[in-house]
Length: 466
Ligand SMILES: [Zn+2]
Image 1 (cartoon, rainbow, N blue to C red):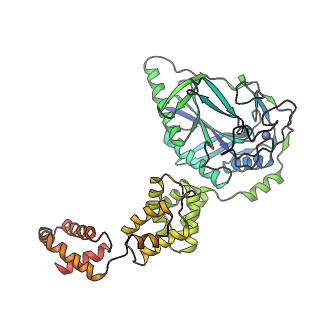
Image 2 (image 1 turned 180 degrees about the horizontal axis):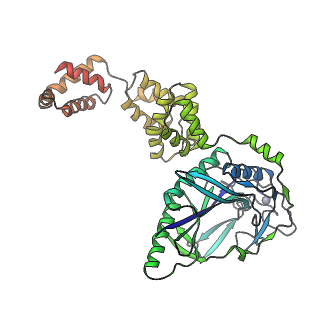
Image 3 (image 1 turned 180 degrees about the vertical axis):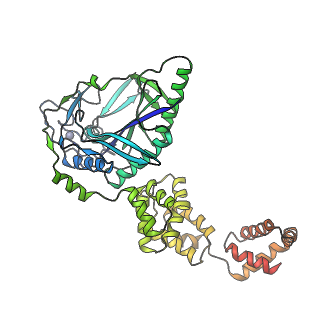
């Protein structure tokens, strides 16, 4: 059965203060409810004032997603009764969003963007003694209430979860390049995913963090809907919750329709004109976007498109790191080869991003130079990189401390001779033309000298000495 999927993506914008008051947005390591004031707590009589930076950021995102930007902007109140919003409404945009009708290209396909709008985040709730369905009581922290969010709503254009994953990776990279979002912050990007099977009702999975979880949630939901239909029943239109531990979804509530929320225009905020002058100013601020950057890396540095995509889409900071390295060592092809293989592997293994790691361009280049000048072999370089990523110590120091420099010629010849003597059968096989025997002999020498010589040099020595 054909699946139809669409996304609503909520992104925390990187601003210093909240959307409608001057409370700081940085709530990490803060006491609960420390960053609050009468406005973000919604006390009667308090008056919100829109933060221009939020609108600027949202216009940039809308432009990057090829949207049409409406010349006039309004805010609306979305009424609902839930403890995460004490004033019983959320300031959002409903009737006229900031931008509409955009698109983003993924492999062989355009995904339509229905709308991009701004809203305030509600408080964070802590479910005590259970999860959202079973908690005994709830604690609310309003530090997050009033933090600006943008919501990006797609058309239902996705047919596979692979397309969803590619789209999310791309959106995240665009937001990073626009410098409007910090991907390392907890819950900086949250997704509501809609899915239906052709001819069936649509189910919304609410509030998923992590791209892998979005994929898992959708996959589970497709299987569940298919089995419901196989049993001759109908899929209910509803909102479901994704449990990351069990990788399953559970019913939260029957889906409300947007009209159920009783939207009204927000009377405390005036209409805002988005003039051509304003849009032109934003144009000047638009940075290079990921796809443009990939093309430039290919053209300027001679790297492959695959390598360029890996550094750009893994993390903007990784692409920045690559370009920093190229400034101090003019060997881009070698640099990127080490980044996309061993460096990335080691970072992933240690579950650390380049920005949070101790890896720096200067010391990373030091390692490449050790290999290029023949001080250590590439094989040992792979070992050094593992230590280097964890400790951040100078690769030169690591090599010296571990005694990894190449052994001298006499010692190498002696070791080769010993291996030849000990492995007469392999030597015979090699002479009979068995290529594998040579590889075996080289391997034995490398083991004996702890890889402190170039394998090609060992090969030549063996050829000479047998
Ligand atoms: Zn406030």
